[in-house]
Amino acid sequence: MMLKVGELARRCGLTVRTLHHYDSIGLLKPSGRSDAGYRLYNRDDVARLHQVQALRRFGMALADIGHFLAKPGSSLPDLISRQIDSLDRQIAEAAKLREQLTALRGQLLAGEEPELATWLTTLEQMTVYDKYFTKEELAQLPIYNDPAAPEEWSELIEAVGQKMAAGIPPSDPAVQALAEKWMATFSRQAGHSVDIMHRLDNMWSREEEYRKQSGVTLEMRNYIAAASGQGKLALYAKYMRPEEIETMHKHFRTRAHEWPALIGEICAQMAANPSPSAPEARALAQRWFELFTDMVGNAPGVRERFREALESEPALRAGRMMSDEVLDFLRQAHAAA
Image 1 (cartoon, rainbow, N blue to C red):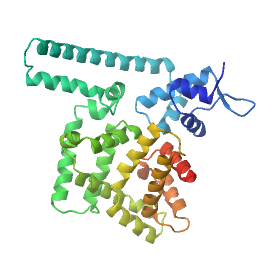
Image 2: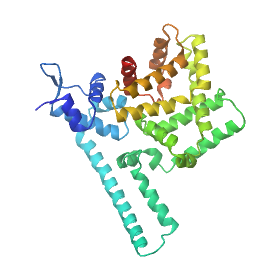
Image 3: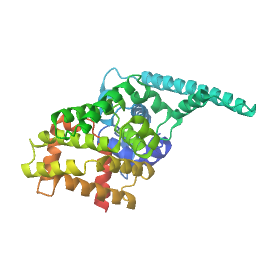
Image 4: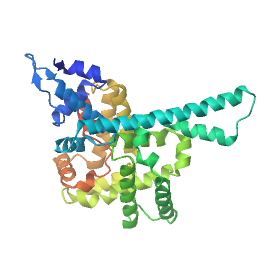
């Protein structure tokens, strides 16, 4: 039995565009084609798709999944065992929350007023059902599970706050080193998953209480964005012209803070409607194109030089929040505009 791409997408809860993307990057090649040219997937293809999706849920980037699956030691039973372990943790934590809620309900029905600690414990347990992450994702998320994460962020935030209070500009090498450490820490504690990084940023943008708890202000976020951008200009300068670097310098100084929010909107649109031809997608693509043009300018060949720098310098891709899938979506949407 072989499945057409549309049926496979429907059965596994993905979009046809996602399966096309997996095919284009060599991650999941269909085993056959129909007479009309439609992709056809067999049992082995579906088994590989299971591995791809499982690894994505464990936070692995698409670029790394192909390499992982190509290793001789990669084992489907081992991967399923990891999924079972994750589900076991989910069941255990759900049971714990059920006990908490049952006890809380019992106290309220008996006319008792639960202690503050009881409410706080219950609220802490409820965070695993947050609207931004699944229970399984939280179980695998370093920023949520690592006991050292709060202290690590506290030290970073304090160091950046001191630089800001002293009036040190984002162009200072010490600030740029802090920005590089900030982005590397963020990427690592997000499991090096672009999708998770987007959602963490989205949560920070939308949830006032989370912002207060994190200690990261809007001014601090913009400061880091500007420093991170300026810190990469020397690498871009190896491939681009001086006047183009000056244009990028101005952009990082004045508009770098607009990128995270825009990327978050794009990812939300992709999740709500994966069609690049949708009016909302075309509007977002136009905003992205305008912001990108503000960054690099309109000189002949500038986009090719920018792309060469990005492909040649690993440091420019480190902590990047714009995945290839998002870029593909935007290019299609811009072409349809």
